[in-house]
Amino acid sequence: MTSRNTGDTAWVLEPILQVPHVLAAVMLTRDGLVTGHTDALSQASAERVAAITSTVQGACRTAAAAFADAERAEVRQVVVESDLGYVLIVPTDHGTCVAAYGDGEVRLDLLAHRVHSQVARLGEKAMAAAVRGADDDATA
Image (cartoon, rainbow, N blue to C red; front, side):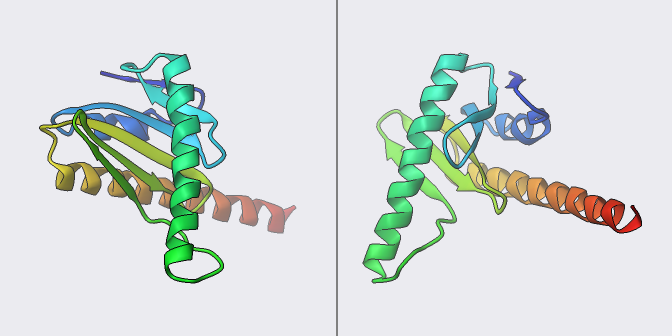
């Protein structure tokens, strides 16, 4: 199984697919635009998943803040368990999000570890690019 990309996201999604029983993954902006998805999803399905994922993230941030009687809350992950399997949603620090779907046999701990690892790698890559960009500005 491979990734379809609108950008360079295969390196993020491919390792997630290596977890047994993971069927699909999507990378999206927090406002619900697809930046990459795996072959198990058509473009239309990926766009639908991204829109729903964005809405779920917003609802979870609002719920967490309401329960804590706070102005706002940042969600670290969302897990949805259904009779069909699990959806794991993990936001990044730079405005994107990774969502993965595994069937009922997936080991949720392995899936969570892999998604969080890939999100951390994504953050490291973004930070490295930002630092290079800052150096380029300083020398110009």
